[in-house]
Each structure stands twice: as C-alpha cells, then as structure tokens.
Image 1 (cartoon, one colour):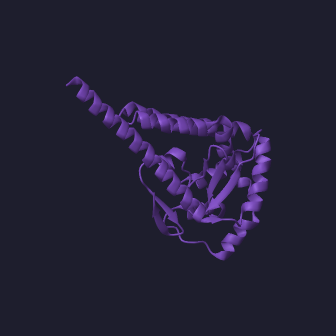
Image 2 (cartoon, rainbow, N blue to C red):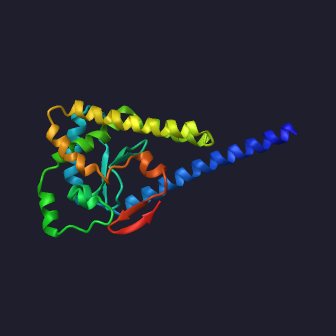
Image 3 (tube, rainbow, N blue to C red):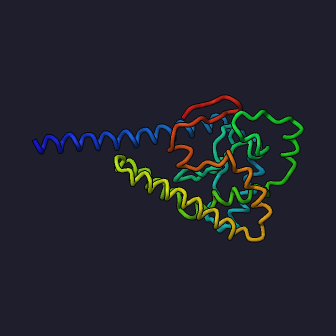
Length: 220
C-alpha cells in the first residue's frame, strides 16, 4: 500500500542520513587522533609567536593554536570551538619531503630549515587564518549536516564540492589582498602547497585516502 511504501522510503532515507553522518564523524575522529598521536612540538614556540603576529595583522579576535604533525595532512584548519591549524612537519622542512614516498632529509638539511625564518609560511598561514575570520568552519559544519540529510541527491554533493572550491578561491584572493607587497613570498610558497595542501572537505570527507606517517601508511 501507499503507507507501507512511504514508511519504507522514510526508513531508507533516515538510515542513509544516519550512516553518512556516522561515517563522516568516524573518519574525522580517527584522523584527529592520528594527527595528535604523531604530533611534534619542536616548532611550537616559533610558530606560536609567528601566528600571533599574523593574526593581529589580519585582525583576528583570537589566535588559534598550531599543531605540527608527522602525518601528511594539511595545511588545514580544524575545530569549531577551539580552532587549530594543522601543518605537516615536512612543510617546515622541505616541499619535496611532503610528497608520499619521499625520503627523510639529512640532519644538516633539517638544521638549515630550523635556522631560517618562518616568513615563507605567511601565505599558507594567512589562508588558514582567513578561513577562521570568514567563518568557513561553521559553513563546513552546515554542509556536513545538509549532505547527510540529502545524501541521496546528486545536486547536494555537487554544490558541496563547489562551495568548498569557492571558499578556497576566496581565501586565496584575500591572501593576495591582505599580504599586498608580498608577491615573492606568495610565489615561493606555492610549490610547497603541491601535494601537501588538503582542506577539511578534501582530506577528511572525500574518498578514502592514505595518510603517510614518516613512510608508514595509515588509512582513514
């Protein structure tokens, strides 16, 4: 009967929405735990001071914390209450070491990386800070809810990816506007994003992918 079909359809939709949301939450929690487990603190002091200065320059009310991890994840900004910028350790050492399968750098090369300033990270950090200032994390959370409720509608998935790409484009354009006169740093930072830059949606909510932890693959 018509009522039976409606009941079955409602059950399928509800089950699909619950399953989609649970998978998303599970993958996010697992990824966060992996990042925290392989966190490194050797860059914390220098990064904290640098991010505070950049946050003030970009007129942020609160300075987010920065986490550097051996996991090949990010740059990305996470968290609704306490925003956290996640950077892969390889990004602070060498762009090439961020590529999967790359070998570890020599101790001499790492020492040279530690001695240089952090100005080359300004465009990357500014991009993440602008996500916070724009409120993209709240928008992303809303996207997760909408996608879970209407998991069966292809247009929702298409719009979700389009909104994510547009948020990235807007932040890129704002970085150029906010860091006027820093074209050289913008150009020098671009290659470091290749293979290392992944966002909230792309990294944690898209197709299952590997997170490389110093040569050891971990699955999300």
